[in-house]
Image (cartoon, rainbow, N blue to C red; front, side, top):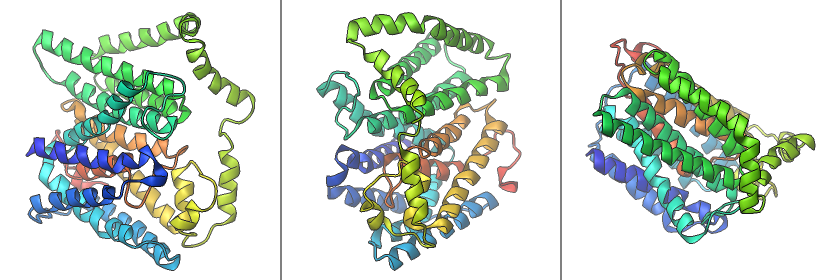
Length: 400
């Protein structure tokens, strides 16, 4: 069953993210396949809803508040209602209930594998068809999209590495396994840098920082990793000028161009790349139930911010519920990691996947009513989190 669920989740994420190839001409079969896979999860669960602990009820209530406001916005603004029905009923039944009820304690691992294998084909086909260039977009519509799937994959690989570190394995195989994962992470960082996506780069820095801090939960056990990580950071800082000069000589200024973009934007007082002006436009058009998704698309500009997009299209009430779902889930994820990380390194997974979506959403509009691959990974991880047992036997069901 676990292998089947990994296949379903990875296919679901990969199919939903097809829109990133050409947002203006998303494949017609994309929602059909996604709904078929969601229906399969529902059937496989045999409609077993399980129990309703308090933290699960809280997420359900908050999501119902958000999806109800979203539905009201769609009705009042005469937007398409089918995606809203999915959001109102499908997400709670399938994503927050059927999937985690099937996966149970394996749910986090299944989502992590689904994220990696769901986005891997985009990366492999891109590298096979187009040599690494600057800014690199591969087969996707724009470089930012390439950076975003790369950092999402990095979040999953980091969580998997943290889990592997906490497991007991044969010495040689354990070292080889960790080296493979580290090699994948290095490759993903290279793609993130080549994409020239500041959002993805900053998100990756935060995720790596959280991973590093998680080592201090058992500082004595991971003292070598901590020392090596510190030496690595110091080494990068010391050798960076030489590395930039060498790589620029070999690639015609590629690395220097990537790094200079950050410096130039700061020097020009344009760190937000004009996003603040768009956000001001959105704020001037606030309505209780928003102006609707169709009107938002016709607004002429992209707010490049999930929360501003939600505020403009769905309204402030929907935004409050949407943000509350995220923060309630993040608090539960942090509590789960804090109580279980010593015995289960994979417990860091929910924190990394949720943070990836929330941080990225501050500078990119990672949201749609049906959901894209990154947003669906975020929601699946919320569902997975709600069913995780506490390894220290202190039930999370008693706290929010």
